[in-house]
Length: 589
Image 1 (cartoon, helix red, strand yellow):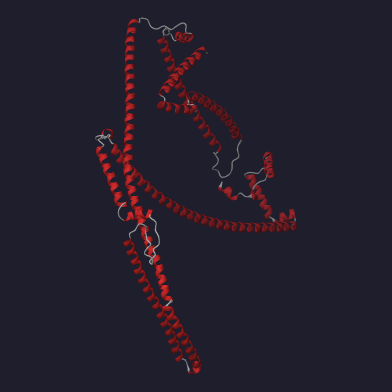
Image 2 (tube, rainbow, N blue to C red):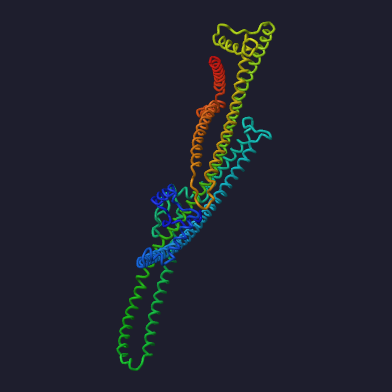
């Protein structure tokens, strides 16, 4: 096969006409084989090698012309084949380069994708690890809380019931806590700095006028306190005005000194200039004299402003500073309000804790009440069940005593009622079967029941035997089928390892047709056996609608056992009736 694949091409493949011509030659017996073929090749070689014979037969000119034409054709064909080989080699190299590039790109893409995937997986794993750690912490907290709750509610030690406990200690502690909260409220909100906030919340404020002592800063405030505050504000304003005036004088002196320093630097720079640049010094001196006169006038104006306008501005600034002082007092008021709110929040927290204790006690009492109510209901149910059991036991004992009495009195066995047509027909059928098997007659109901059970056991045994026989037949048919398949494979692929292809002989074709016919017959037999097996398995197989029935049985087992008992009783009656009718139909057939 490798040799065929390597040497097979379009140039050495026979066409349909050539194959038809070859078949005609084979049928006519004109195909040369063996020694005849060797002799023909030898004669052709001798004819081509002997020039005289070729010249005598074909002629010198025709032979030379034909040789030149054949040589040119062969050279052209060789050149075309060489070019084709070069093109194919170039295409192979191009394909190899493309393949290598694609492989490299695929590897790079795969590495990039793997790296990004690993990075994403690492990020996801880190996130999952963090979440798992948080979840583990939460679960540990829940487990610890559950353990504490289980230990609190465990029944190992003495149980605690709130309904029988003395609550006077708790009541006294709660009253003491309420008293302490009242004292804390009085101490925090009626005394100390928070009391000022409470009074300021209901008081009206007005501006302070330092020149008029008749005004009041706060309504209801004493005159001495108000006078002290006004004196303090006046002192602060005087100190602030003096300090502000000193600061303005210092700034003016600093500006004057800077101007003098600037003029001195200019004079020094002029003294360092060359001789040819000193021609304009007289003009500069005149300008300096004019500047000094202007500066003297500016100094006079500065002194006048410093004596009059600056002092007035400083006093006005001091009046404005009173506003800053009031603003600071407002900030202090805000701080007092914040402290007041903090104390209120703390007191509210204490009240919430006390209310939580009360609610927890109420919840515990409610849960204990629910538990007592459930225990009472359970005891009532148990009492009713015990009473029902006692009544059932008494009834059963009475029935047992009655049965014992009737058993001692009864002498004859129960006879089948002739008025019941179903039992009569069933007795006749079983009796006819019993007559054939030479058994005792069926005159009583016990004998009829024993016969029915015996027939049911026979049916089960025959069913098991049929299943075993079907399994054996299936294995035999499968083994025969595998044997036929192996035989077909040996016949079809026996010569697959040879180098040259082998034509199919007529005997093999006939055998293949027979094998196909046998395979069709075998397929029909297998299908028939499979249908019979499926038909037999359909009898004992669970149907899909029984899944819903199983779910309903599961639900009824826990929620409605009476309904489940009634359904089971109904199914038993139905099965008995079905078995009886099946046996009846079988006997009738």
